[in-house]
Length: 151
Picture 1 (tube, rainbow, N blue to C red):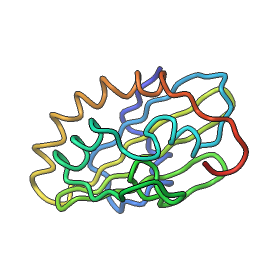
Picture 2: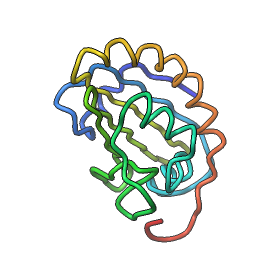
Picture 3: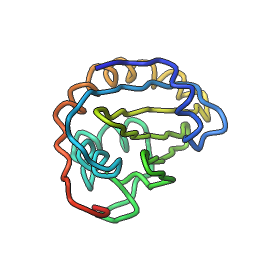
């Protein structure tokens, strides 16, 4: 599993006008699935309690409730291509993109953040350490459904 600190080419698929934090984890895999199937396998259709605590309580992200073909774990689907999907969420102090890319024999998860207000500069660096520890295991443990069409 590889961590890339500056996924510059991936930023083209992001929706943020400025990026203050970025990372990208890539996993080699034999599993063939769409980017959306991978995103749902990694995050779920609705956020679990741990995700709710970090995303809503700590980061204040505004997430959708319930299952929807337009959201993944409460994050809005902001864009997609043949080999990627972008999830978007924002709070009063930061904006975030999670981008899942797929290719022959690999899947990657990119996190892009824009610090919209000063608290983000203090909150995220501490959480980023935990984020970078958790993401590799979350990717490795994901088991995407391999059905045709959108989940």
